[in-house]
Amino acid sequence: MTRTDSPRRWYLFDYGNVISTAPTPQDWDLLAEATGVDRLQDPGSTYWRHRFAYDAGSLTSDGYWSLVCGDRVGPLRAGWLDILDANQWSHLNLETLDVLEDLDARGERLAVLSNMPAAMAAQFAGAPWTKLFRHTFFSSALQLVKPAPSIFERVLAELAADPGLVTFVDDSPANVATAKDLGIHGLLFDPSSDLSRLLAEGRAVSGALQE
Image (cartoon, rainbow, N blue to C red; front, side, top):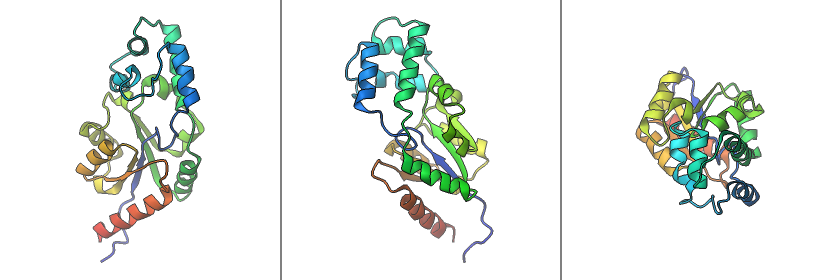
């Protein structure tokens, strides 16, 4: 039996590498020049090694960039590095935006859940893309970081949503796996993904489960 009065679904999107594209080599070169540290894009670099703590709000901007640079960084320089960092993550995926605008035009309920430091979230506040979303959840404000189950549980509580009525799109297999463990319909995104098709297939699977 098909339900015709099912509750409304939430669509929950990651930001980096989903709404935005990855930083360009030129972006990383600008940050390397400003920090004096090469290859910050590498997984084992100081940029990534301390990123979870920065995303969680456990480090100030000064503290994070001091760890990245390996030397004391004052507030003014840290502020400039935060601007460069936000800029390199500000290149938007136009295909994703098209899908988001279509969902919004259809009256779907959209939210963002992103690991993002407070300085970057502040720089993006009021950006045109944020107006598509009813809620924006950033790790630094929640003081919780994906893929911890607690951050998803917090978001579900804020949305007053049943996990089975949330579709979550993220580029991290670990984040998607945690969401699925909690009963959320998780979809793994990569730059080659056809987001419209991915969501359509997700709706078909979710609909079958609710019949």
